Image (tube, rainbow, N blue to C red; front, side, top):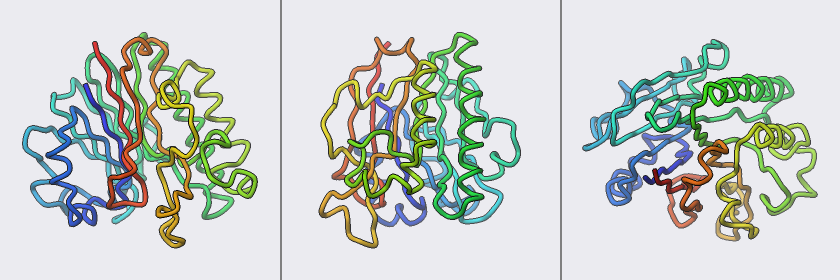
Amino acid sequence: MRLISWNVNGIRAISKKGFLEWFAEEAPDILCLQETKAHPEQLIEELLTPKGYHANFSSAEKKGYSGVVTYTKIQPQSITPGIGIHRFDSEGRIMITDMGDFILYNVYFPNGKASKERLIYKMEFYDAFLKEVIKTREQGRSVIICGDVNTAHKPVDLTHPKQNQKSSGFLPEERAWIDKLMEAGFTDTLRIFHKEPELYTWWDVRTRARSRNVGWRIDYFFISENMKDNIVSASTLPDVMGSDHCPIDITISF
């Protein structure tokens, strides 16, 4: 089973850049998109109901902001948009799908760069989400978490770590949260297979950083420890254009 995750920075915008053709060609078993910036009623039919897929959206109350969608070939056993905390769920950042063999969390984590208040919001979101996935794991379920975490974990995960030590996205407290997630029994799938540097997933458009591969790895697939024997591969897909992020993928077997 192949899963792809991608922050598309606007599903309506990317649909005009060959997204549907790419989707049809890749044909993953599950596709998780973040930062869709749209409500379902604003979308064309091909995005609402792609042939062969079930689509489940979580949209922000604010139009043109945030949002995630999870496309699955198999009908999920259940779907839950959010974690039951209104001030987080109102931004449409989480879609939880029960796929039977595992619970999948498709998440667009907050960005903390805009203000001190948004950084506080981000850290509180992090803490609430960690409690949620620990609870699910303690129920004996296998868990996959994917999406834009908006934090680079280690110095190897961005081009200029020293210059960004005081920037949101590489702050000690943000990086420490990923440590907590891993200490709670979750594994960064890419680093199982790839230890090398320069595997970035986001590049600053304003400075044309992508052409120079001056980037950050802020998009992840995490799996619970009880799925480590199921993971076959994990990679980034930097040649796929259309967003300031690139897709990432994993393959799992059962």
